Image (cartoon, rainbow, N blue to C red; front, side):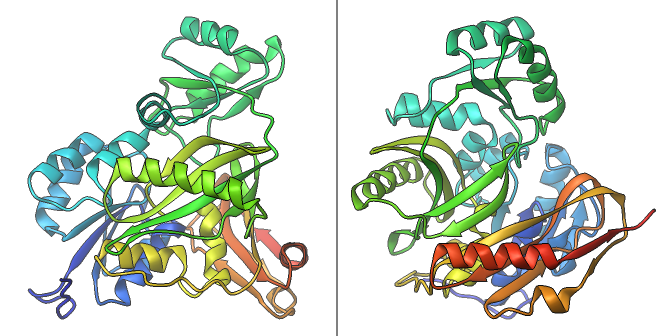
Length: 396
């Protein structure tokens, strides 16, 4: 039975967020609705979740010694990873010592890199996926490309938001793809995965909630990416019922194998009547930001409920909805969002500015949400609002 005492008192509950981006910020807010004390961690100060947390610490999530020091000092009831690149060996040790890692240390360990989760799904669970090979050196990489064939997709085994990802379309792209992968990995240069290029009809994120009452599947989310990074998402993605059932069966098998409570973002390719496994994140998913307008309990609210051991008896879906990422380019710590009156002039349109302290290169700084009677109407609204948004990137 879940009991929550007075916040910031000896009978209160405490959560440590490992990663404090825009997704962590929403999780922090939802946890605080239940009176949970939130401590936010990230590698830079003033990260979005830090701006709403009770306390924060700046450190590299890959620094296991420092992470352990903070956990032992804070003594949280819940350790909640928000990013992949964490010292997962430390999380495994902490879990053995009695700390509660969400959803489990095993899930964090296996999904920290693409190799662990792909081998679990394809080799242990026999779930269909695109053909793949792993490579640790330039020589192994060239052999992997030859085995998989061109075209193929190359990704660091540790990265997110498309960093380090590229497509090899001709033999002339091989050298460049290796360099991009080595520069884009979250933990620096290292091992990569080479995947066959899948000619899919569409791809989905199937948000799957494991909670005290069982497993709940949300309406499937369709999405559009550029260079492996999410740009738009919409819910629901139209699917044949039989295909959706296959997707749910795969998501159920993978999340059961990972275990624990929380929301999982299961990414799948749909090719006709076939469904192929791609990836899974044991945490809220960027494409799932659309749930902040599409349903009564967002993915963040559901994650908080599940983490706290609370039931999810019903998720009420409102209507077709869409999200549009606002990606800003430049080098600045002063970004101004303008013309907001026009951006929000249509009904059923929302804007969420994340509060990230700077942009270097390109960075997702906000998201536009919209709903309508159809997916097409919702997407059109989001795009109209996006076109009205004016952004000034000022000099440092």
